[in-house]
Amino acid sequence: MANAKNSKKKMRRIATEEAFSIPEVAAALRGVARSPSHSPDMILVKRIYDAPPNDKSPMGVMKDRLIDLEDERLRDMDENSVDMQILSLTAPGVQMFDADTATELAALANDRLAEVIKRHPGRFAGLATFAPQSPKRAAKEMDRAINKLKLNGFILNSHTNSEYLDDPKYWPFLEAAEALDACIYIHPRAASDGLAAPFRDYGLDSAQWGYGVEVSTHAVRMIVSGLFDHFPKLKICIGHMGEGVHFWFWRLDYMNKHAQDRGSAPKIKLTPSEYFKRNFVITTSGVESPMALDYSIKALGIDNVMWAIDYPYQPSAPAVKFMDTAPVSEAEREKLYHGNAERIFHIPAAAAAKAAGH
Ligand code: VNL
Ligand code: MN
Picture 1 (cartoon, protein in one colour):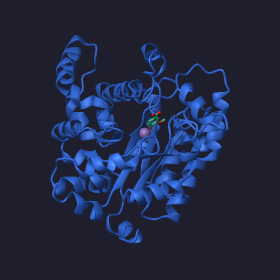
Picture 2 (cartoon, rainbow, N blue to C red):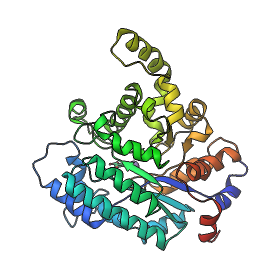
Picture 3 (cartoon, rainbow, N blue to C red):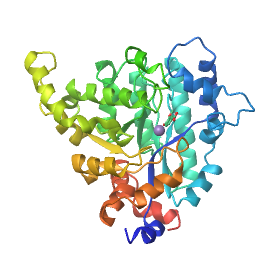
């Protein structure tokens, strides 16, 4: 930690779960906000995308902060010595739209992402959006996003119409992601219909609690269904310190075996924790707990943990301070801050840093 100040100047910082939107998606979400949907996502969608014009509350100004890429965002990055943000279309992405609208808007968002990365090489990378509502077209868009637009991976905002990726109808795009060697970041959205009822009180259907339960459930469904025996090389990233999944390793492994023996869970080749360690990586987005970081590194290995801020939902300065002062070696800090992100999201180490003027 004696080096913390020194490292603040020199160490490349890549923030891996940083949210953005484009005006067209924001406008479509405003349409959703005014629709009769009962989805628990409506709370956030209304607050952000249908805020009264004079609403200066944090959620009232969030739409502008999400759409801004080159003004306040770059200033905030400079002020906090954040070299690069890996941008992803913010939740719920295109997943509340009909299949055609979702497919069209995903492609548009990906085009915009590629444009801003081109204008600021070294400052931004991007996770491409796709429309799970139309799995075959999603697979095509994935191919375009990686091979033509040169984006760095994919973002998925958890369930789509309350369905999860263990459903084989989604497998065409899982096959594509695996073949492209591109990681899918599963980001939270409000819980699916069947999961949502107990979260309706106390503001639980939010980042406070419901988001984490939604994504951890998604991850566990993928694992215990045997999906990773079909896609052994598929890489999934989850944020918020792994949404707590690895805290459950011991019990999950033990009880999954019982469930298999009873015939209520399918036979799978590895234990749940082995799949998690093989097929998942996690980020620290929105969790600035040294104790949770320490446990995560011990449970998953230093190569499987990456730093994130969760901009603009959370402030950059404390996230930087958290990682600058984390009780790890400098070699470990390099991996957390950029080395692992460069590997997982195929970000060039030297060229991009040079382009950024470092
Ligand atoms: C919030 C936090 C929302 C982080 C997010 O995505 C997020 C929130 C919609 O506090 O509402 O990534
Ligand atoms: Mn986030």
